[in-house]
Amino acid sequence: MVKYKRGEKMAKKRKLNYARLAIVLVAFLIIVFALFQLFRGLLPNKYAAYRNVEKSNKLADETEIVNEINEGDMAFSSINYPMFENETLNEEIKKIVAEFKKEPIDDTKEEIHFLDYQSNMIGEQYISVHFTYQILDKEEVVIKSNHKTLNFDLTENKVMSLKDILRIDYLDQLQKEAKKQLNVDLEATAENFEAFILEETGIRFYMSDFTESFLFNYQDNIRYLKLDNALIPTLAPENVVKQPKRKLDPNKPMIAFTFDDGPNPGLTEKIVDLFDQYQGRATFFQVGSRIEQYPETTRYVYEHGSEIGNHSYSHQSLATDDVEAIKQQVYDTQDIVFKLLGYEIATLRPTFGAISETLEKTIDMPMIIWTIDSLDWQSRKMTNIVSEVEPRVKDGSIILMHDLYETTYDAVAYLLPILSERGYQFVTISEYLEFSNQE
Ligand code: ZN
Image 1 (cartoon, rainbow, N blue to C red):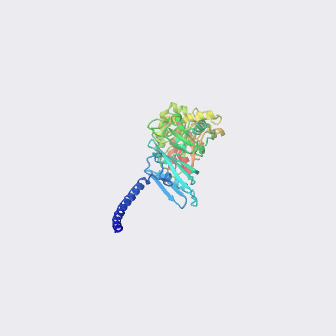
Image 2: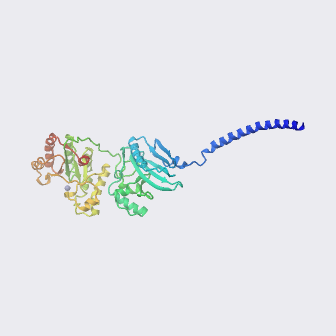
């Protein structure tokens, strides 16, 4: 009886305990679940570092950071790249990403493929992106890495090459900087310095394996800078006026008139005006020391759309000069025009039409000779000049004249209506080169 009674009591007690236990259990599960939820983000996640890329080095105002995760049976890949408002830039980025994606992924191995990047925006105009593609093994040791840099000018809407950024003998200067800062001997070739990005205080150049880099400081290298942005110092004046590009008819024959040894105030302007009348342009290969004397004449030529070419500083013979003298003659003239107009002269007419091997090796500019010599300096007679030119002129002719003589002006005034009537368009040397390169 006692036993029964006790049993009844016990059963009652046990019933109570079961209910309590169930409540405790449920509460416990809720707490565990809550804690799990709370700490899930903190728990070690496989490949977490490759799923969520570092944001603090992405500073170029990207509209989106694309993150493509692919988990195979064994291999894992995370591809990250930026998208911007500029569609031309986005297309360039997609091309680069597509190149990286060609790297085959071996899904029988536990390997990680990781594309990441860092970006800068300078002067609200230049966007630089440095892509890094890594393949890592399961211990997360890098077994292969690849790099690519991209620099884009939002104002010009184009990818920038080194030539768009730097001027005169910048390759020699880069060679010196690499030696000074990294103690490496590199040849002064464009290939050795093609990997770079723009930073706040300079251009960072990467060695070909990207393990080392050096900064080409803006302040210390002002003479070599061509970048057109108020935040970056150059020799160019403020408020540079750019020559508008014009459309040429590729089906119409072209003639390039060239005038050497100016500027010659009064006459040079009159010749420019003549070309204006026929929607034409010409090229004036000017002498640096004369540009210093008559800068407004040079400006007039430029502002009327004709081309300024380089014809040395003091009309000395570049073909017999040594490297130092050549550099001085050519680059001093480049500097004078760049300081005056913010324009980097694109073509050179060697004095006396003579080119030495040294000259060719020293100066990386198209050297322009002529196909027709008007001999205007010799005859100084309008009829003679016309008869040297008119019967021989054809599509692609480059005519040598000098804007020094009134008789040259008279000959041009006589020739332009006749040649225009025959369907010729009068182009600058740079226009001519651009056109002949397309063919
Ligand atoms: Zn000359």
